[in-house]
Amino acid sequence: MIVTVLILAYLLGSLSFAVLVSRALSLPDPRSHGSGNPGATNMLRTGRKSAAVLTLLGDMAKGVLAVWLAGYAVSHFALPVELVYGAALAVFLGHLYPIFFGFKGGKGVATALGVLFALSLWLGLACLLTWALVFVVTRISSLAALVATLVAPIFAYFMMDTAAVLALLVLTALIFWRHRANIARLLAGQEGGFKKPRV
Image (cartoon, rainbow, N blue to C red; front, top):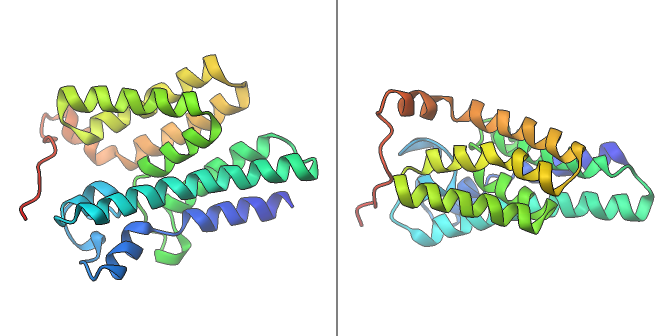
C-alpha cells in the first residue's frame, strides 16, 4: 500500500499542466519559448492569462491531491503518518521529472505551494505571504519563490513535527537546485523583474 501511494503521487506530479493546457488551447509548447520552463509564469508570457491561471491551479491541485490521498490512506489503513511527507516529495519529484514528458519538468513552485497548503493551511498562508511581500518589493518572481521556499522549513519547525521539517528541507534543496540558473543571474545582478507580455 505504501509503495502504491508513492507511485500514485509521483504519477500525479508527472501531469504537466503547462503542456496539457497549451495543447488544449492550441498554444505553443511552453518548453519551446520564453524561459523554456513548463510553469505558470512562462505560460503568462504567451499573453493568455487564463492559460497561466489554469496551469497554476492545476499544478497546485496535484500537490494538494497527493497529500490528501496519502492522508486518507494513513487514516484508513493504519499506515505511518510519514507517508504523507513521502507523498509530498513524490508528487514534487513527479513535477520536476515527469515520466510522461521525458523527465523534463518545471521548477516546482506551484506544486510545492499546493503541498504546503495541504500539509498545513497556516504554513501555506505564511509562505504565500512571504512570496507576495518579496515580489511586491523586488518584482522578481524567482527571488520571491526562493525566499518563500527557504523559510518554509523554518515556519514548519514552529508549526509541525520533525518529519515535516526534514521533508521540507529536501523540497527546499530541490527547488534551489532547479533554480540554480536563476540564482547565478541573481548573484550577477542579471535577473530581471517580471515584465508583462505583449498582447
